[in-house]
Image (cartoon, rainbow over all chains, first blue to last red; front, side, top):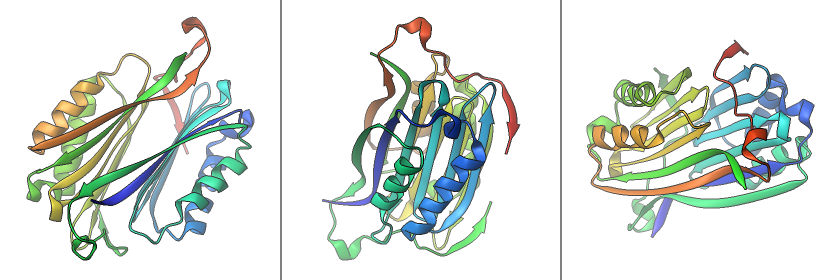
Length: 133
Length: 133
């Protein structure tokens, strides 16, 4: 059984609260992490909630990286979903958890799209983006 | 232990392949599902890959709904991440799996942001969106 993608489901507790409430900071962290990992950014989108909290998604050619922050609890939820074998997901995780100075961490790795096919028949989503909708 | 959010990690196999390759169709399905569920849309973004495949995310006030499709395998990965108690996540799931005519389904539910606090001290992300970045 081979899988098309993998997803890291990351819980970061004890983060620096001010950083969690700054959408520009969150965007910079995720974009930097994606760029370092070898992934290709299609579109970042970050939103600030009132009175606090940020939701952000970076859609990448290899799927997405998402964050939702609760500054009031020093917590954020991070999803790192990639396909193919070219992206260093651990690097994305390490960059994000370091930048937010997380004190407690939980990670779950989930294989996505498990197919009963030989490797050579699994074609990953291509890197080249042709058109946005 | 209470959680701030919950996430449905959904695998849909045996879907109608043409539908999986149509970004406008995917967007309509996810947006309809979110609207029916009681969630509030902040921003949808959908992208079509060459030669095939769609990635789409609907950022909602309660977190996000995301899809990545592999039409060549009749498969798509769906994430339904919500916070608060006002959103009917099952309705989002049911709408998406019905519209793509999935023949095989796997669902995993993950609690996100587990806090050792009494209910009254858990304040969910507010519905009102103040400003986008």
